[in-house]
Image (tube, rainbow, N blue to C red; front, side, top):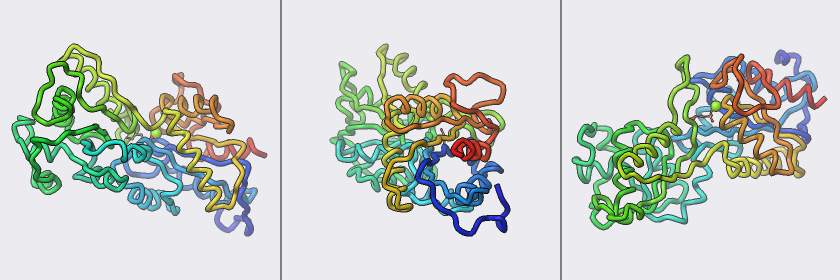
Length: 346
Ligand code: G3P
Ligand code: MG
């Protein structure tokens, strides 16, 4: 890395390689940038001894806001301009499901932010747990709706409403209430609120935007994530019904998410940097072996491109332990990860 004044005047964009970054535990922790992250972004943007700019995208399992809002936030945190054209969050690939289902239940996030995200994706009729509690407060015996909950929920008669699918967009703010409502729908007659199926096999499918059991937030130790809710829901369903519940998770480490990222990067390099051919190497920097490293390594086996996994020690993975999925390189932080790729390309 160089000082501002040392930056070569003419910096050219490399077409040989690119970067993709995980966010939590790599660039951000608990809403604050990891110290080396700001420097790492400067290096990518041309402040390096070779004067090259390196294209990059962001690939997080997080969510709960529109991509636009997340990019504004990330731009402030990292002191760069981040565009939705270089950003994928856990629920981004769910937009491809919008035409498949009519009425859907969306779980998670603050207020009704996730309803807005889903509507923005083109989902036609989006219900939240608050709407169902407003319709029948007996649904969740220990949850009293706050002023804010009431403001964000809609008045609706659910008598003949068929909920066709359940999407967990972001982390639940009320595990007990949300799990009760999901369980009710799974046991319902074809997704109709308040009904019970005799066969228990006609409930709607459940989709999670990712499967991270733990993640790296502001606390010194990892915190429970959406994957923990998934495990809990499946175990609870088994305990109540005696049957197995199969749910689907998007996000990393799913191959589909990496395919989505490849298309986004292709588009980003073409329309922002004028590069039309695929990169030789894509360096993916992550902190969670189970999603970041696993996904990169498995995708690398099925793609013609070369995805290269780099594990950092600022988040879920802890120095000195053995990761369950082995990265191509392990480095202390994101700045080292960027320098590792640059040196490797010389
Ligand atoms: O809830 C977000 C978390 O599970 C992971 O985010 O950026 O590390 O993929 P990220
Ligand atoms: Mg992470």
